[in-house]
Every structure is written in structure tokens, then in C-alpha cells.
Image 1 (spheres, helix red, strand yellow):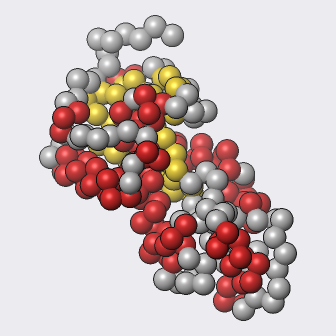
Image 2 (image 1 turned 45 degrees about the horizontal axis):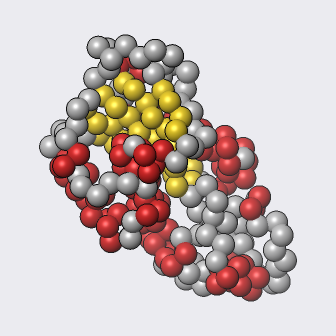
Length: 213
């Protein structure tokens, strides 16, 4: 579709974090910058996976400052493990994406949307483009990936204190050997995605650690 550049006032980037972990929510980040945004205000933005945790945190805090100054906007929406189990990971990502866009409150006709990988915005966002490895190619998508990743990581660190036996603060719910061993020993907690952990066998699990059906 041809883009009428005269109508576009802002560029939106969209990316997700946490699609593959065994536990925790999936998060979708949406970053919105004015057309012609000066990226020197926010140096180092790229695919969140290429950055250290310290660098991601620094960019996140810088973006928060720019948001307070009215120079950019962003929103992150997370969908829980329970909802992922109920509707599936792809619909859960779509739901998080829609919620994040709604929080921005922008006019779909006045923005150009750039999405990473296999993501698509709702049809009313008529100027949209899905870009393979977009988080590395488009800084606005990279920023969205950072906002989603840091928000989700911080959440997993917070909830780790409630379930210390799993080490969520270290692996953030991904299927590391430590995490798999903890699953074998303790079973699932409410943060685990049942649909992602069916291959594990479980012994006796304390009642407070068993997910609610």
C-alpha cells in the first residue's frame, strides 16, 4: 500500500518479549516517536537481545525521561500465563498488541506502524509494515523490544521473591537447565504455562506452589 506521507505525524514500532519462556507473561511493547525524531536523544537503540541488561535498563530510563518531556510515547502490555493457556500464545500476543496500541490513543490514520517478525497491527492501522528482524533494522522497533523486555524482566524479578525455588530472577522464566530441574522437583506454580510444560513429570508439590485450575 502506498503511504501518504503528508498524513503521517508519528512512527510506531512494535515488538514482543517472552514468547518462548516456560513461565511468566508475554509482553508487547509499542514505541511511538514523532516523524523526524532525533535518535541522538536516545543513543544505542537496537534489538534488545544484542544489548546487555545494563544497557537495556539505561535506554529504558532514558526513554522514560523523554516520555515525561513529551518527546515520545510508549506502552507495554503483558498477558498472563493463564490467558496464554486459555487462548494460545499467538492470540495472547495479538491481545497484548491491541491493548498496548489502545493505551497510546493515537489516530490509526496518522501513524506509520513498523512491526517485527510475524506481528501485525489491527486493520484500521492502514499504514503498517511487518519487517523480518525489524528490531535490528528499525530503531523504533528496537526501542519497542527494549521497553517490552525490561518491563517483563522487572516483573519476573519481582515475582521471584514469591517463588524463590525456581530462580525466576536469573532466567526470567526461560527453559534453562536450572529451571527445568526446579520444575522436575517442585512442579508448576501459577506463573507456569501449562501448555509449554506438558513434557515434564512432577512429584509431590506443596499446595501453595500448584497452579489453580
